[in-house]
Image 1 (cartoon, rainbow, N blue to C red):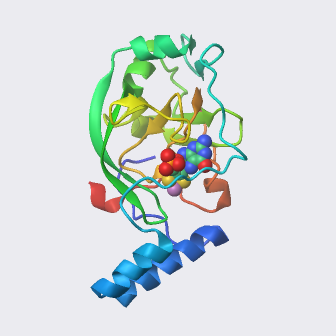
Image 2 (image 1 turned 90 degrees about the vertical axis):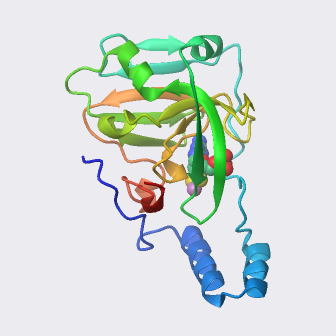
Length: 219
Ligand SMILES: Nc1nc2c(c(=O)[nH]1)N[C@H]1C(S)=C(S)[C@@H](COP(=O)(O)O)O[C@H]1N2
Ligand SMILES: [Mo]
């Protein structure tokens, strides 16, 4: 799997609700003009800022006492980290733009967390480990990256957003951040990082979206 940027997902094969949103946005853009632009922003909510996208029936609950981030699969030294242990690993702070494939974005998001690469060094991927699946609490949502993609320096297991611990709606206690790809590549309520020899299809990929969801414009 290469790291070459690919165009963002096309609309074919996209789930109906998402297709409609994209189409709505397209019409909004076509309309042009400040007034119509403002109107479509009102109608379709296309403003800068977070809009919750959660497919789970009710948001998973993070229980600090029982929470573990499991790092396992094809690794030499599997890990099970409680919340404090996760927070005590060497951390980085990074600012990046967040893009949802539906057309909204959040500029300049400040994340604190652990680089995927640091976690990988701790567990020691075995030679056959070429992909990584990221699982959310509750077992409904997951997504994956190639090991090469996951090792890009911007990829974080993030636990703070704009200087405060992630809220429940944003995915407490941790979420995967992959700034160069669309938001669906980043599971919220992250609880397991699984090293694999084959790539697993994530929630939205089983529904027609691209596995390599590069954002063209973000470089
Ligand atoms: N567990 C889980 N993670 C998820 C999703 C989800 O539905 N469930 N949606 C994804 C999508 S499509 C996007 S755009 C972002 C949305 O993040 P937000 O709800 O904090 O705005 O989370 C991603 N991670
Ligand atoms: Mo999204």
